[in-house]
Image (cartoon, helix red, strand yellow):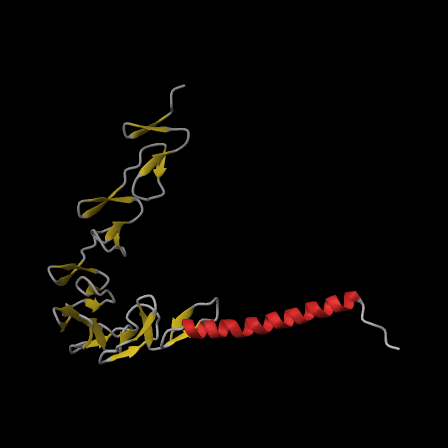
Length: 231
């Protein structure tokens, strides 16, 4: 003879049936609510209970999705913000339209594709690229501003030309891009356009720069001489 189910078993069965019913209702209700809440040309998001416009559409106001109008020479980006489109390469945005970039001779489109730059050896003058004139004893540089050229070693730019640097006796060329571009050898100092000997007094020696002197220890410099400091 089968025994009757206990009170505890009946309570468990009732609890399980209740959970199943709640799950069924939960699965049906949000779907119908979401369907009613979605505006035309929109889709439910993967998070929360919100929605977003389908590709090719953008929010219009708070409750609608309007089609993105892509102008000529542009393409849709499917962004949910901004214009929703960009100009194709070789065109740039002007007053809401995509206008072709007019690339002059001896120029090329930039990596972004919405502007141009002059080729090496040319400089921009207005809307054209003009060849850079390189003087004798000069060479083309990679700098896009300034003259676009520099002088060979041993020459310096002056009045659009490269003039030879006059290096005095006991001097040598340097790599400085300013000044005389030469310096005096160790033991000599600059005096105008010449290099003259550094006169070293007693108890002194040529310093680290090589162009002046300093006193030996414990002597101190006093009026062009090296003297023992008074106690």
